[in-house]
Length: 253
Image (cartoon, rainbow, N blue to C red; front, side, top):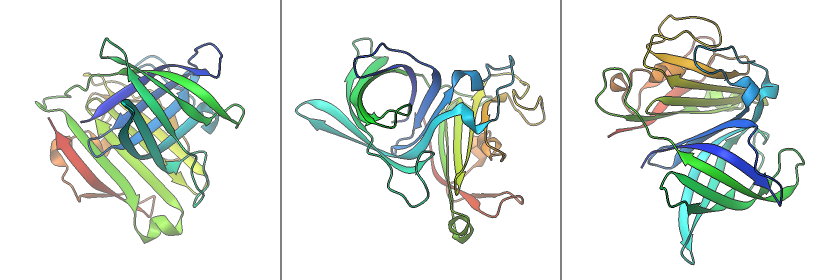
C-alpha cells in the first residue's frame, strides 16, 4: 500500500515537541521510500514565494527500503538507507528504526526510537508525530499513481551518482547525490496551470508546481507528470548529465 506521511512534530529526549522543517515521506507498495526534510524557510507555498536553493536549507534527505515487523505486538519499522545526504559514497549509513503507535483517529501515528540528532550528531531518544496524507488523482486521470525511478549504469558508478525519484498521487520527490553534491526537488499538483515557485516559468507545468529545489542541478520530476504514458523499464536521459534514470516500479489504484 502506498503511503504519504507528513511529520507534525519531533521531540528529542525529554524536550518539547517542535517542528522547524517541512518533512514529507513517500513510500510505495514495494516499501521503497524518499524522505525529504527541508527547513520551512526553504519551502515555497504554491504561488506564494520563492524558496532558497541553497544546500543549507536541507536538514536531511534519504531514500531506501522500509521493513515492518511486529515485536511483542508492537509495530517495529526499519528504514535501510541506500542514499543519504549525511553519508559519504560507499560509507555505512546510520541505523534508522522505530516503534509505531497509531492514534485512535487513524490519521496520526506516533513513532519512538533512537537516532542521531542532526544538531548534536549524538545518538538520542526521539518521538515523532506523523500525519497520513490522502493521495489524490491529478488532471484527467481516474486513477492514482505510484512511480519509482532510480539512477544506474556505468556512468552513475563512475561519477559516484545515486538517485531516487518517487511520485504518489499529487506529490513527487527526487533525491540525486553526485559524490558529495546533494540535489533535492519536491513538486505538488495544484490542479491549476500554476507558476513555478522557483523560476517563474509556466511552460509545461500541467498543474504541477515545484515548491522545493536545493542544489545546482535540474531534476527530471516533470517526466512523472503524465503517469499513463510511462511504463516500467522506460528510461530518461538528460544530455547535460551522463547517467540514466530508469522507471523501476509503477502501480495505480
